[in-house]
Image: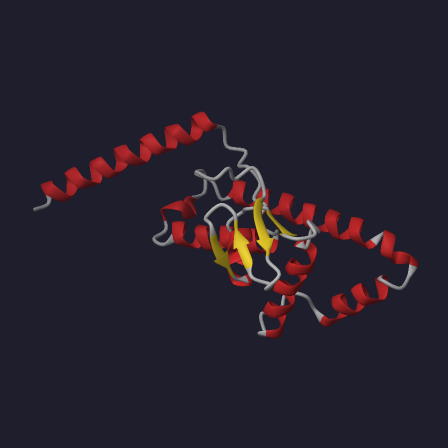
Length: 178
């Protein structure tokens, strides 16, 4: 089984093909994007030189999504990024972007916590599917880094037991109604 704590090592061959060292098969940029959305860290290295090519390929993935109309970055932001490469702002921009994404992750964590078991919306049909979609969206927006829930493990175990008991009661009621 793969160790998901270590970055997934992808080797780029001279032919520019990308090789997944965990599964021993070739992958595409879209496969790499999927790994990242699933929460995996990825490292892409040139087989011959050992150079780290991760940044180059991540930028390529972003460029391909943007060119297909899956725009996340407004033109103003892209323009400012280009300007930052030729100005003194270049030293501040990476820190600013990192802090901004950290704030987004924290906000997402608080929002997900508020949508916990105490929320009456949990009983709404389709709520779990909606919650899964929101989690996938947040995961995509934050590069796959999902915050840990602040619900203690004991509480989540109790919640599971309560759900099981409720399902058993609903089943008994359904049999009684027949």
